[in-house]
Image (cartoon, helix red, strand yellow):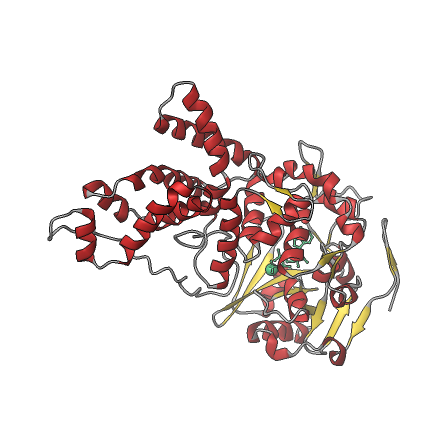
Length: 456
Ligand code: ATP
Ligand code: MG
């Protein structure tokens, strides 16, 4: 037990919590991770299970992946394992391969003391200091993490939970607390505000008062974060089964408008979400699809988010004499451009938004080649799901949505009849079985990389 003083805060005790109290069982940890930790310890290095996995085990959830932190440098890690690769440029991580598993092994690092201006520091144009990660002690590694719940270490050999920051008590109280001075930590990395919302939503944790309080005022710091990084974060917020809750919290803390400046989402006096009925339904559908293990894609969600502003902009443009198609093309370009300055949607998802929007007017055609071509589109299902969502707020869309829904339930012969086609006409409908293919590899999929359709 020891006491540590840092510039901003004091941590009185490092606690070692035994298994009769924490209750973590080895069989809950992947075998490859257990072997990796054991081998490093046999080689004389301190090594632990860390981060999200420890948090989730204590919350009785099955961890997504098992990360290891160690006192061994990447080169030392490489010498311990035959199947191992070093990755990353700025901060090197080791990937240890065990059977089909990949275990990420990171050397303990410090955040760089704020008093020490080292050669590892870079000043960005906007004045924020970005330090290269530097190796550090076990304790430094704990305190440079974001939330106390994410900073716990678990030693499977000794069955001990090691808590440098009071994370165990916080988790037991279902509380999410930033380590150190909250404002300082948000300024260092504004994405932590989004992570706070994400963990609060997905793990049903309460934000500690000091963690909650500064967010509203600091929300605009998100403007300094690279839009591509915000896209990754938005995917994690919106496509993990808690989109509705997360959106409500984002709105509550003034974060939503930083991410989606054109989209109107507010809260009612009683704290429920006030947004277009279509958007509310889409968020609920997305959460349900995740629970049902159906594919979800950011392309669809962005198409829904931007639909209302798209309609507004189109109305303005048609007033100036543009026809509907031109207006849609120009309005889409403008909106996607403006959106990409806050949250950058990768090109393929932008293209998907456009396709979904452009296909909407084609649902008018119910006979002949035009109708068949629509039905044959790769994105037909997404566009149709979108049409159904429009019917939530526009009664004129109800009948067409039902007609197209019915059409899809028919066998090919009846479809030909409905579409007024000759008996031998071909209709090639893409495979739309819907179920997510099982992921082969354990590990970190790029967010939003799931295949196909939408949130209908
Ligand atoms: P998830 O289940 O979403 O993967 P996670 O806690 O594992 O949750 P990661 O983004 O995988 O989240 O990060 C792993 C760990 O790295 C976190 O648990 C935390 O300790 C640390 N970490 C991640 N992002 C930050 C950050 N922005 N600031 C400080 N520490 C961070
Ligand atoms: Mg993780």
